[in-house]
Length: 447
Image 1: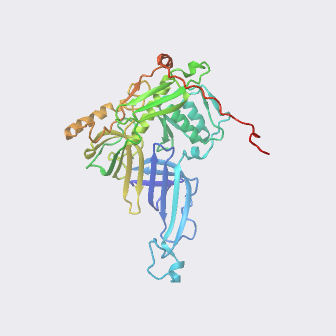
Image 2: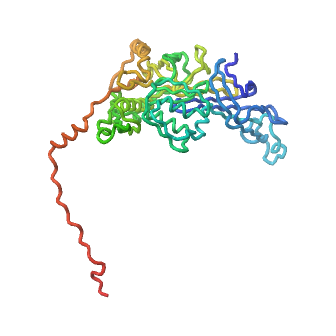
Image 3: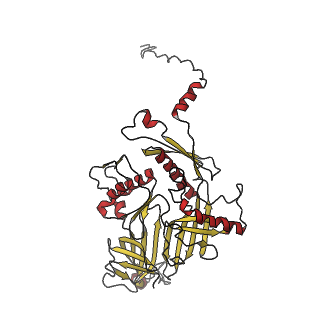
């Protein structure tokens, strides 16, 4: 079985020479690039099925890894002898023969494609009234993607909304991102072209093969930073339901979430534009903290081949046990980015970006964002770390590679703040200064 198969319009493309496929959890769609080198200049257009808009599929180890449509086709013919070509000339530039002939291997076709969800990026939403009253988040997403017949794979909590308004003329992707941000979802395209909506890890628990240095890791880069890390995030908003107005719409509509995993005193305030219920505010605070933690702890790996040791394609959303002793890594990570690459020599390589899985759903139960389902797997890492003699200290590298340790901080209510302000001694007010003296315009005019 071929490790990589590409089909266009239902037929296999057999003469391609290079392929790069990139998918990210932060992006709504994947990106594919395919290069075709011709052995000679064709007399008529070749691979005519490869046209803009044609369906293109990529199979890894016989399993579907990408479903998309061709965005653009670009054919290029370079002059024989041109610098950088396979038949670069060693003769003088005045040689007319080498300057007008096209080299036999210098004709190339470059195909670029995106996933089926690219229509959601290139189109404005088609909702007739721009308003939905008392919908669920799932109903909102289904309605937005309905005109393009894109199937939604729902893997998150369904949340009841009071109302949802769309901006007239806004792109579908922008409205989807608003729903995702306010209600704490991740949205991206699956291998088979569905729109996955999840509030935690995308794949099944422990779905990815272990990644261990010395066994299946070619190269690695492990980074810890504090520029994105936050110790506290405060979420503020207001109630939007009709029966909540005045003080009832503003009282206690704020929450603080603390991350005990970072020593940095960096505090952030986030505005929440949905209905600011206690659960919604806490959920948003934990979501924002998880996003920043994943940016401050990142591992990039190059692994053998384009399929896992168990024969499955690598996939975003899968969780992997990662062991890299020189960096103190014995933890569970989620694959959030991947790039398959096959070069002209048919060398197969995959690059993976992994980050700690999100933790702590609304209510502080430790679940809701997927971490609780990984607890047993994370215990394996602790045992392996002890066997390797790697100890963790607050004053030495590394900081824990684990997900953030989140907790809700008690807040002083508005009533208590007002009572405290009333008992505090008031500062003496400065005497009011008289207004500056203004004179008539003609004052002092000798004329």
